[in-house]
Image 1 (cartoon, rainbow, N blue to C red):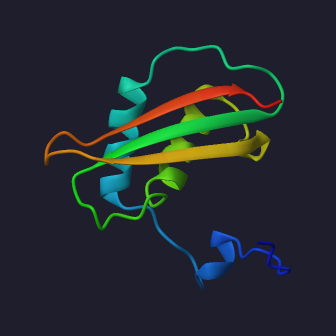
Image 2 (cartoon, rainbow, N blue to C red):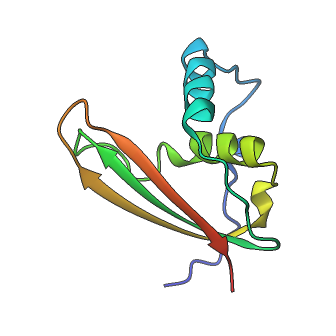
Length: 107
């Protein structure tokens, strides 16, 4: 179903400046240490995420933007090149949470 309204950017949702938390700085550092060295395809991109949450109430996309920002910084691409995103949510036991990603060329 199509809704004819301009989608609202997260930048338009909040008023005033938002500040990064210390927790995010630590998370970014940890994620960057764990990311593998890969060569990205050129051009438009498609990303598939699988997110393992221990809480069924977690929103499927809540972690995507901060993680994607880290990916784009680490791998040196502009996330406006992402034209397709697929997200799967799985429930795991507490302490077994994860995020998986696969970046491919978008056809």
